[in-house]
Length: 101
Image (cartoon, rainbow, N blue to C red; front, side):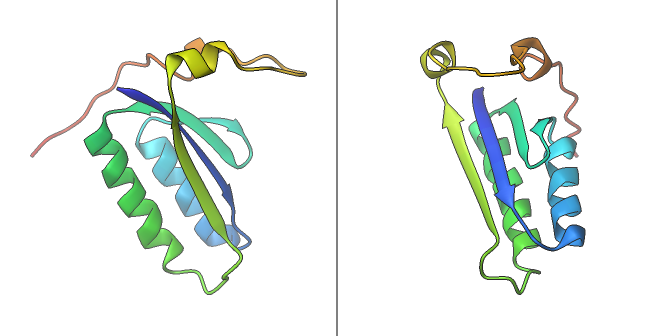
């Protein structure tokens, strides 16, 4: 499992809402309005990225963007927080149900 962050700047409400729904479908938790965080296996993350690419392909806006990156445990321990503190229990180590078939 790897911790991943998904950040986006999308002007079209419909596409933005669909990408948020995809993130939630894969067990990611909203951290801010356009920021999700969650854990996933590399294979599942690749499938999630494909779904996001499919949604982004529907956009005519060339300025829209999605940034996805993984973070190691050491990086998360060395983070700096200003304002509301991040409760990692809400973002990682959630039990998952994956249906295969």
